Length: 196
Image (cartoon, rainbow, N blue to C red; front, side, top):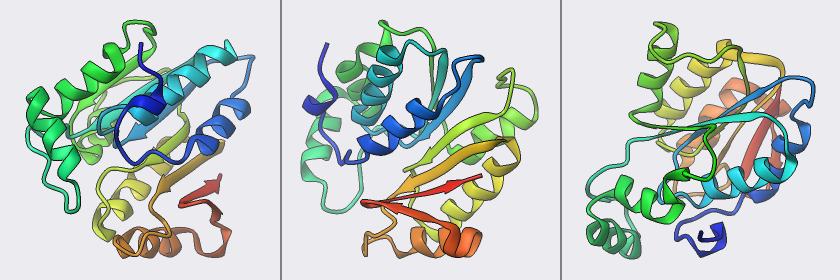
């Protein structure tokens, strides 16, 4: 099984995931969501942290997993996607489809569709989410919709956060986060966190 360090991508928020796992309760199951997984480096890191903690944590991974990768400045990612026949196939190649951890559910859909399906009961968890990390769509509209959609289905004391807060290529991320949370946002590297 590949280490997350050997999986291509832009993953640089392991400290955020380590904090989420450390804060997870031991007296009850916890429920995490990762929006935006690309080839699975962040997902693999999270699962490795969860397994090492021996806590009962469920992880929902949500991504569009497009057949073709079209983001700018991403020649290597386009080549990987083409070689494997799509992002989901590359994700499964690099993560082994998480056959080593049965508390991962992978959803090939937009985050807002995932939220809607939860509200309609098509996707269920026994409780609200303890941790949500947003690294999918980076537009103002997308991040704003995700924040508004996830907040009602998160526990008191949970953490919501995301990536690319300080990335000038994605000004909509910072705009949506600042609009939602103002000065209560905590910055960690290129990520943002809000403790609820």
